[in-house]
Length: 500
Image 1 (cartoon, rainbow, N blue to C red):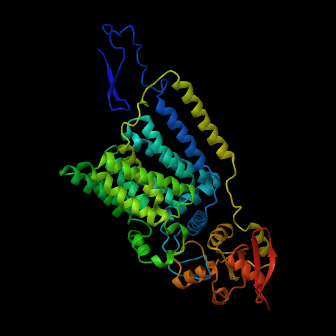
Image 2 (cartoon, one colour; image 1 turned 135 degrees about the horizontal axis):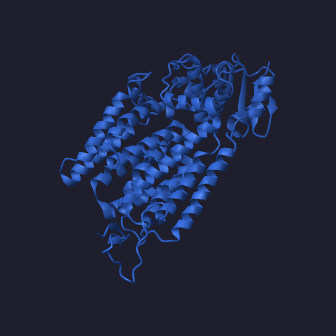
Image 3 (spheres, rainbow, N blue to C red; image 1 turned 45 degrees about the vertical axis):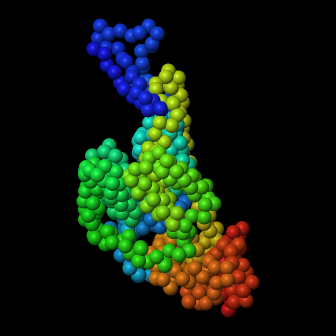
């Protein structure tokens, strides 16, 4: 018998690979037998995928330094020590005891468990697994593009954004889960897996509504396109909704399901927070996303014109241009849509298995291994942006303790919580803006303003000292104020105390 493997070229035409069969089979003299489809005969796209895996490893193994992550890790330590999830704020003096929903408790526990078992490198390994997993899932979602050129263009845009988006936050878990939902929506994953996936998502990050949201858009779009029951999408949606409801079976109960609504009702607290503002299109991440979004809109209207592509593009595109925080989710949702719109671009068939592909794949795989080894051996943290020297100076002089009311930046508050914990230091504010009372948020906004009412805010905070960066409006005001005395300076930070 003769076995035949049928594939598609970049131009959409069918190709056939004829393999050797029984004795009676023959191969034309002018055609060499096609190589076998196994790991010893890799395809061209395998080399590209290994290169993307190396990039994912490099990003995932980057040193830890994100300010939100620092508080998540500190909270995980508290959970492990107390065997309970905090229900009120333990960190600040401005909102101490205020009700707090630790929505990302699952991520905090994962971080703290890895720190205690293998050290901070364990957390970086978790991030590396998530980043590589995202690469693999996005590459699979780009398969509808068929041609290698289309897949490289689509994957290249997303990975180009990853250096600024795939950071060590619970949001990274949410991005990974969203990609899994998309794979299930394409019929390439048993949708019953969405039950544990959504349970994890609900208990790890508040972005879980995006999972059911994209599936609803797919269902509506498929029905508008075909006027038939969208079986695959409906099955995925049903299991995703069930998994979301099961997410209430946890330490915090149904409160987690209502958490996103609480955020929407407290929008004033997010004013002035950079990641919740519309993009300014100045950072590289924002510009790459603008290219991705613009290409998707043009090609969907030109080549695709399916409601199943149009609706997610419009909804997630609007979500991203109104809030920088949503760019990560939008970039993932747009990946299969852009790939489908680029279907057939170019004539390079990535499934070809030329002999040259084997040494190239081996070289790129070795590169990925070296990137992983060097990443693991690298530093675990990158804390240069934080006032380590100034805080140590204050601690040495008894100015930074649990009874002191030190006013500092929100991201400095995150670092103080990680570095010292609530039993040694109380912070003024951190980036948990959904937790703090609005008067505290408004006062902090004044401290960031060019002409804020600095003295009035510091009086209301009953500040015993201020730890602030020098080259800011508040820093310059402290330098010349008659009511405050600067007692410590370094290259970036200053410490000021009230004049007697």
